[in-house]
Figure (cartoon, rainbow, N blue to C red):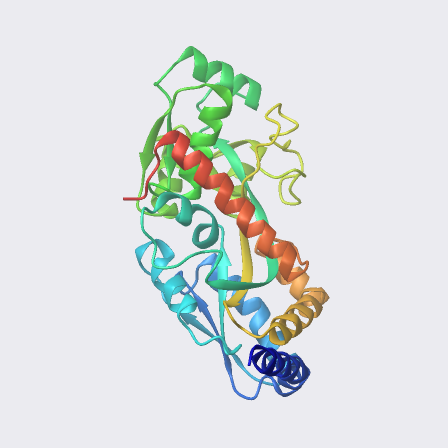
Length: 324
């Protein structure tokens, strides 16, 4: 009896393996939607639209962007996690949905690792340690010295409790021993407005959002939070160069499918998306949005997500940060 069952199991496995190439060859046969957890016009939306038309051309089916904003990104992410694992619903993840949110929400309606099949890391951009120009500092070393001389007197803004901006500020405090007051705002726009007006003295903001204000003198950039310098602000050192080794925080975007999506479909989507990302017009469009083109294998993207979740979870536990 056991031999019979084992034989049936082997036959079933062989049938699945044989069917995989057929699935990849016939896919897709209908439109594909890319769910996003942010609003239309957001960076997530913009990155998705840069890719969607070219992916549609390569795969012969339209890619439709569907926004499901709400609850800090959890609404859209849950919808993607619960979608059919057939390759016709994808998700544009980011450093919030698959980085900071799993770290700061006590209960999430999805598992960032178990509920998704990573396809490819699309793009990334650094944050900039930015200060109001009235602050008498020109670099990170001077800023740390000033903050230590004024414990608890400097305040830093963020897009809300548990946001990447908030976590970046707490990481800076943890690594340097400085004491700053956190001032959360309801989104990036009011937080940036507060920085430019001098209502807050410090903020970590994406390079694309703050670069015009640094160039105009309305804000002062001190360093970027990636291992390499930014194309948009090449004069700024990295946090590593400024003496804070290992300080790395990025705003990133990547394509996922629901867990259980056939491996053949994931592999094909990875290959086709990589080809689209290599197109000069796509690279140029992403660069204009302030992003560097990334890429890699599904396995590399899976490792990236795990590292992000672990990094932010460790920081959130050490500092007591929650989004609620």
